[in-house]
Amino acid sequence: MKPIWIVDDDQSIRFVLEKALMREDLPTRSFTTAKEVLSALEGADDDDGPQILVSDIRMPGGSGLDLLTKVKEKHPGLPVIIMTAFSDLDSAVSAFQGGAFEYLPKPFDLPKAVELIRRAVEESQREEVAEQAMAAAPEMLGQAPAMQDVFRAIGRLSQSNVTVMITGESGSGKELVARALHKHSPRASGPFVAINTAAIPKDLLESELFGHERGAFTGAQTMRRGRFEQAEGGTLFLDEIGDMPFDLQTRLLRVLSDGHFYRVGGHNAIKANVRVIAATHQDLEQRVKEGVFREDLFHRLNVIRLRLPALRERLEDIPMLARHFLQQSAKQLGVEPKRISDAALERLTTFAFPGNVRQLENICHWLTVMAPAQLIEPKDLPPEVGAGPAEASVPRAMPAGEVLVTSMPVASAESAAAALPTLPATPVFGNGGGWESGLEAEALQLLASGHHDVWDQLTRRFESRLILTALQNTRGRRIEAAQKLGIGRNTITRKIQELGLE
Image (tube, rainbow, N blue to C red):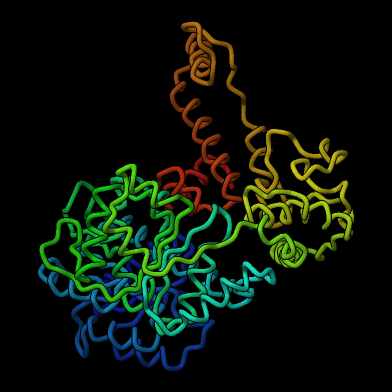
């Protein structure tokens, strides 16, 4: 991993951060002036450059704000954390306009400083992986007439900044279309920021979109930039816009109308230079009639509508997509790519694919792990495709594609969950059954046995099941699992470590 660069003229600050990060297995490199950092950046390549830059705001020979400006000119994707005394708070706030990731007020709480740096590292690594994946894989595949219409529309919109509404069923590839629209637009050099409005709890969504000021609500200990600010000069993709809460629709309409917004708890208007692309699997006209979606917002978003076909409408693309996903899965797992027979492809083309392209991708992941031979035959296909004899090879309770695919050796989240002690389903109180009654029975048994850690025992088992089930649902993607559970990235990472679920 690349080191964390620390620049501060105070030797004690450098020493404390170095030791704290060393305990976290995070390499560091320290500097005393901004000039030293700029000189080191000039001679650094991609491998020995910084993962994160942590800089004081006031130093002899050049301020942290000046350093931020110069660094962002040459390394726009490098997260920069600005350290500041409380008297420098106004300067730190202005640093966000220059692209700072976050600011760290002095004197700082060391564990919180490490947590902030860890969060910046995770964000940086996630962006690196996403960029590599986008560069390595083709944007979109499809020879069917319906997909050619989509490609033509992307081409026609390539020189435009107009707002686009993408409609289509879940799993049909709406985010891929949004990324393609961004990549082939005048804003291609700017950031592409995506947010699923249905995956974030209502009380957090406003802060996610617009950011918040320090002290705006309980827990807002630092100022935070929202997705609109993160997407400055680029594209903001609002997925599942149909699920946006009604009161937030009003705020979004205001941004689209006059190009300004306010952070939560803020009093200064911020100009938004952002192209908005929205997507939904819902019938927005019907939601407008039902009174749950603003008609004026619908018309603001619906400037250009791009309908993405379901996979069953482009069956001729299945063989090409299946081979592509098999190659992709093999590369991820470091194994030889499997081939698929014409008979197995024919079986796939007769399947309705209610989960669309995402379901086909999941099936190909499953086949890479579970198919016994290098050539995939119809009998190797998962049971929901109608393979008959293959039904015995997969538990009925586990939908295809929901196997947790990780680096070898491979194990499913379901098998890991099965290793946990089971809660009995015997009802104790009342006449009802279900997991609540099983929990009551287990708690009663432990209490009667004289245990004094019943809370810890049952909480650990409950949290383990919940996290493993979410990871199974997202095929091991922790950030997506955390969003679906309504918890933070750091929380799920900490819980996985505490519960021994690595």
